[in-house]
Length: 370
Ligand SMILES: C[S@@+](CC[C@H](N)C(=O)[O-])C[C@H]1O[C@@H](n2cnc3c(N)ncnc32)[C@H](O)[C@@H]1O
Image 1 (tube, helix red, strand yellow):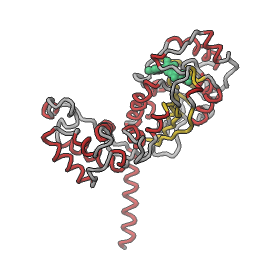
Image 2: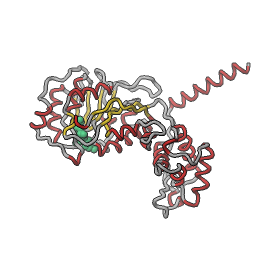
Image 3: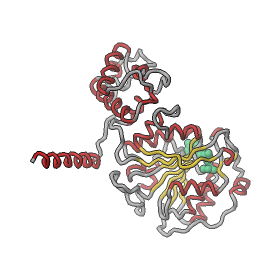
Image 4: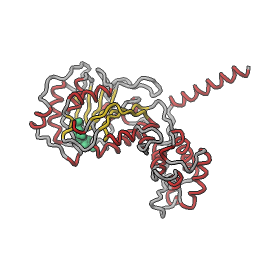
């Protein structure tokens, strides 16, 4: 795939509405298709994503191409779109032709199954990778007005890849700007002790800093959904707030939030087989100094960090524990003991950062001792 470094903005195209008639692009309910036809809103999404001239962008679910046009108008160097519905490919090809050679690349794929980092793997003009510890973000973005039915699984897939610095995150702290039903957006960004606090709040906030950058009334979409929409921008953190593998944190959050109105220990116990639940749950809570009668929504990220890191130690000590599923109690931890455990990857720059903190501590100590 060739990419021209010379940037041209987008020449005039038929209006989006005419495009939809030309290509007979009636929205399909099964694919949660709600189009954004107002270019002021699509441009606003691109502005909030902070796309600058020459940046490289991936768009998920371009549909008839409203946001696609906004991204191309911003002067991005290259845009790759991932669309599952074949009907949109010809109109997107029309836009690609207008955008200039190599600028718009169309991938007819399922976003849940593809690694968008691969699109740029062998591209010599790719913007430079930026180390995670650096304050700057790479000149790359993922943007999408997601179908409601895939928004949550897709964001979990992306947070996981982010935590392992895989897929597009091998290039650095690439930000994500995605739309969600407003209720889901509020859960993602929820502060502690709010009724919106849930598993997705912890999963999103330990690895990134999510923010609702603006809201879009449901009436702005065609056809209009019954709900309003929140645009969320996720900026990956330089260092995650929890030091345990993603799968461990995910399991801890899932079980602890299982009984939202009850004491948190009730959910915690479901991590363990019946015969071990008292011993292991109390051991964990004691080491974390957490009151078992707290509710899940009143636990902070630091407490989830202690719980997840402590549970990870228990899983390393007790083979099979990580794979135990309380809904299938007949499958014992002995049966599961041969299954591999997720492993913590230590990234060099994190180690470096820790060493710097250690070195600082030591030099201070030396100073005060002398
Ligand atoms: C809510 S519509 C948004 C369309 C367009 N971006 C807009 O704002 O008008 C969601 C789009 O995602 C596409 N889509 C649905 N599931 C998908 C998947 N698994 N992978 C890629 N695209 C998907 C739909 O076909 C549709 O074009």
